[in-house]
Length: 251
Image (tube, rainbow, N blue to C red):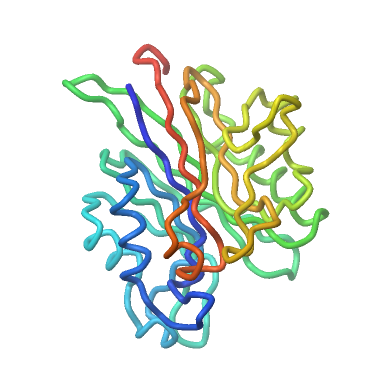
């Protein structure tokens, strides 16, 4: 079954022009028509974003019936974190803390989706994360993720995605995922397999911060970054879109 996934750090829907314009994010989502949308830096009740529940506002405007939000950072007023929007039912969800010591709070939102059609139940495990700024912190955070009960209980042949803002300029996390845990990178291109899709800064991308990894009966059809002109200003990141084929027999 063909499934489209989009991951996007929306920067609280505040663009590089410093304007809060959630309608720009909605327009991008509507254009790509992804089945599963993974958002990072999503405000809830924060004055800079008009105290809106931004995840709910975007989900409703873009036509996503299923939504869960994992709050990671609590501010003086409001909080923010990751949001997963889906056209498929969300069977269960939990926010996994990836905070290391006294560094900025980070998290990974785990959801189990039922992507089956015609009565078939095809579970897909999805991890929507936002990692820290230092290599040391990211290494520790990946250790927290793979040792979490949510990740450890997943069989290797079960469809699984790990995606989001890795803040991983040099792709140092990739060997752990691809060489040890048998994931493949949907966002690495080129004959040498060492060129990553660049997504930051949005107006002239030089960094490959946003990534999608997959395993377990999932095949990559294609991947690309958004090329809409509006994406260069809507956030400081550009979204990545991946089209996948999931085998009905994977569990």
